[in-house]
Image (cartoon, rainbow, N blue to C red):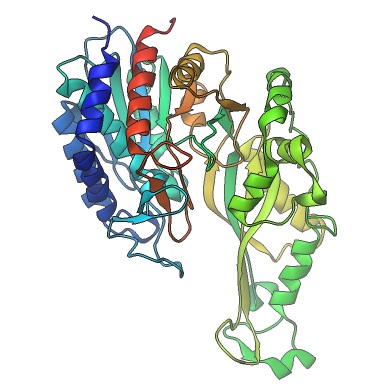
Length: 475
């Protein structure tokens, strides 16, 4: 029997206050994986949600945080893996205008009421909104259009360290599915739907140098800065090493073979770019990031090509010596630099660390130590012509939105674990609604429908529509 979306939509509208309360409940439960704060408690809460929905499953233990793994058998022809995450970043940034763990509803112009909290849009809001949508289908005494396999991990903010362990263990069950869905708010701040068809890969590492390893400079502790007259500086040594990795502008990477396997854009990318060029608004993107200009003052499609197709080498932070108030003259005994590389097709993550090591050695910096913080994951792409992607595109159009199709996003996620051998499933990102400021103070997700974007009701209705179209898609 076809799903009566109208009944489900009416139920969502009528029960929106209760749905909002469930979002608040979830963000009020800390799950800060970098600090191991509230993680297991949140996993148990998610498991309770899934059990209440009618799923069978449990906490799948790994060498790190547990994966919440559950199945919902709707007796349907098709099965979808729903990938989610329940962990968040810390809340220690200055500038929060509300308690980041209080689940506060407050006005955020021009959107109206928003939920401002850590995890609001990354991605507890979508997680709970998706479950609200599933519960609403059942509440109208209808069947879910597809069977669901929930994979909800607690280490995405740590680079999904132990998700490969889980995926390997459950290979055969995951291969039963037609696709993987990542529920996500896809509207930008103007209400335009941006559909990402992939992600870049990432490897995160740390460079470190101390006087003891180098054989020069202070060995055990920082010493008075006046001693620079006759004592070498590990900090300056590291700065010199870093300067060899790029050209003078800090943009062109000079590491040998860094670009060797980078093969973009593809034929399908070139098909998407002309349409994307007509609707891409780089000024809106710069405004949201509070950035005055892009590299080389690039605009429009040229700026977008850099974002989509350029691999990057980034310094995330440098720690050394005294960084407190006023002055303290110091010659530090060590320095650490956190870095990441973003990978595009067909770069291989296992090539990254040997390239970095070989480069440092070739330039005489064998004393600089490398520590892999996260081995990361590879890039992932899904064809816009694949049945699951077409089902999501169809859903947007049925809801009055013409999506802007992006070949990839420059960020990273563990989609390659599902998208490559042996699982080989298309991964699609989908859902209406808007939120922003992930990893930043005042992270928010829009609740009301009065502004330029959809709110919680629109998001939940889009999930219902996507599930319905998954059930109808060609195998």
